[in-house]
Amino acid sequence: MILRLYIPRDAAAVSVGADEVAVALEAAAVKNNVAVEIVRTGSRGLLWLEPMVEVSTAQGRVAFGPVEEADAESVLKAAVSNGAHPLRLGLADELPWLKRQTRLTFARCGIIDARSVDDYRAHDGYKGLERALSLGSDGILADVKTSGLRGRGGAGFPTAIKWGTVAQTKADQKYIVCNADEGDSGTFADRMIMEGDPFVVIEGMTIAGIAVGATRGYIYIRSEYPHAVEAMNAAILAARKAGYLGKSVGGSKYAFDMDVRVGAGAYVCGEETSLLESLEGRRGLVRAKPPLPAHHGLFGKPTVINNVLSFAAIPFILNNGAQAYADFGMGRSRGTMPIQLAGNIKNGGLFEVAFGITLGELVDDIGGGTFTGRPVRAVQVGGPLGAYFPRALFDTPFDYEAFTAKDGLIGHGGIVVFDDTVDMAKQARFAMEFCAIESCGKCTPCRIGSTRGVETIDKIRAGERGAANIAVLEDLCHTMKFGSLCALGGFTPYPVMSALKHFPEDFGATPRLQAAE
Image 1: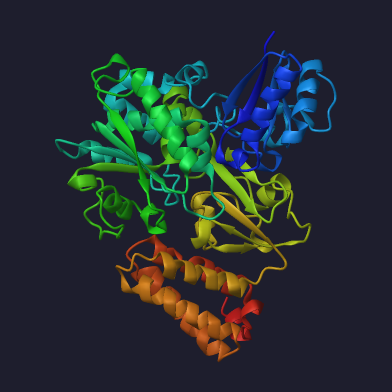
Image 2 (image 1 turned 30 degrees about the vertical axis):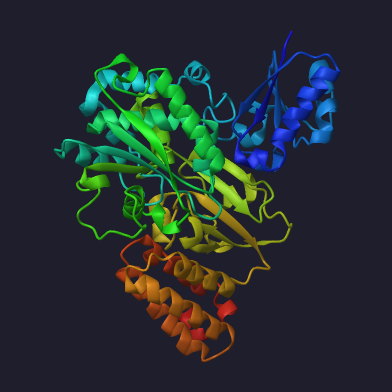
């Protein structure tokens, strides 16, 4: 009998020794004359327990973690005997963190061999594509519309409208572009899905190509993600070999093929028009809109641009039905959101759940509060350009409109937690400094406003003319918000103004500022 062990090979697990654990388990198996099969999966998202090793049993997969290289032999013996072990966590599917999730997008992540088409198909992979091939363009677009799917990259724009526009635009060539330039602090969902279930992204992009009449796709991955680049390239080759990419997708009349392109790490290239400039071989500068990429995108052709999570949601919708997806969520926020918990938090990782869960539940209940054990003072939601929320707003549902009503952003679903030792004026300064460094320089409000913002916050922190300089800072934020070409300059005011609003004491604020709220 062969003992099957599952060990993640994604960046989160590898960074804490997963490769060494795999080698040590193989060596322990040889030493103890145990026949083993080691399957390298993606992470399940319980990052505080990585590397987490799972053992296949008649009852299900039993988890051990976090496993170090020195634990390999004792874990192997416990796996063989089904005996007790200090690192034994029980059945993986029964772990509260996993059991409470609604895993639609990440259903296979941590389950399958990320490099195997056969394993992907054995877990409902490519069933969505099979249905898409029978539906054709109109049927796919109708399903996407019914699902209520909105772009998971941060803007929340209805996916069906974007796809429908490209489908209706006449052109001899159209493109599908996947934005995998995941650069927000506290976000790692794109990386996890590319490293743990890359075929779902390929399948989603292929379905999009059929829907809009595009035959060529590109996935733009930031250079800081070498594991994701390797995983996607391997998956594309495997999919092509299996007949799911190429001149006849799945033996059909539709053609679609794709390649990986690696970006140089510029944050602004997460903005779709800067990304297109980079894909075309130029410096990543924001384009003025209109024209929209849906009409005049990559190489001047109609282009669908969505992020990794948007494309990864598509196979579930096509396979299980649009209404099955739309039944989750609240209001105009339908389906699920993979939420990433990071920063000063006890249980950091990825938690996929339907829209509507409150911010407090995510931080206190799911995340377990701060790692330091100190009180939570602030959380930033939506990356470095997201607003800071105090505990008073922890009853806010995780929903696009609910966050907008509180002057916040869901963004890419990242939540970064800070305890009561944080200096919020310093955090506001970081937002302006980040914008100044990452600005492409094309528009004045972003290029100049962010630099003046750093200088002004420095004056406030030094106690120079506090009230007057706070007024200048507010004016700068207003100019950047409404005058910038793209979201980099336009969203930088969110962390600055939220810090001013909710934590005025860190700026030495006068009663005037507090009374104005």
